Length: 276
Image 1 (cartoon, rainbow, N blue to C red):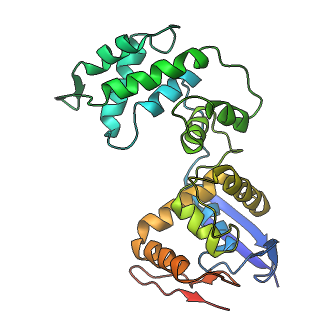
Image 2: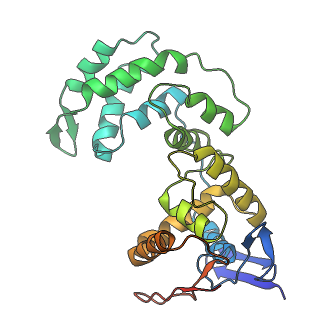
């Protein structure tokens, strides 16, 4: 027996036929029912709704050097507005077009007070960020041409201070590439519960291996990775209790024969059932 996803909204309508809930999507990963959390069928329904509501990602319009610069000037501990103000300053002064930009010059620019939302603020990571920018700019200003997003990502990973997650985020923003994935703990946990990822894998140590499996899942579901990432992020943000439950479940169990299943929850109501 197949399953039908039918969505009608002001923005349009979508319909898709999915296989029987017990049919495997990938080896060890069953489709599940449309209202079973967190099965592929469940995410497919949400992702198709998301597709009607949110347009596909588009390139940022920045150069690759600018996109890397914007990423390096942000990050943990730096408010978004402050990072953007720092980026605007160094871009206006030619940091992303002048070869041989020295660390001392960049440090001086970033050490000057920044006007952010009417307030004068200091960029307290000036020396560290200037050092990172000075280290990567020569390579970025002479970057080769690339045929695919993952090629750009792999090239960026060779630059100092750029790991796979940062590189993937840069590529997605710069080119809207869908051949890379943006992984986090939520994606990992969902994948582990449905049997997509081994419990031994981590985003920090096995990024490319986890990404490869996720991209295969998205292809089998006929979804863009950005769509699946978005609905997982939205669902987890809406239900911190579900996040904790999945984390606790993964800690408490070593083997799950079948995915965790949960009927669609009402607001503030969560009922997760794990079947053997």
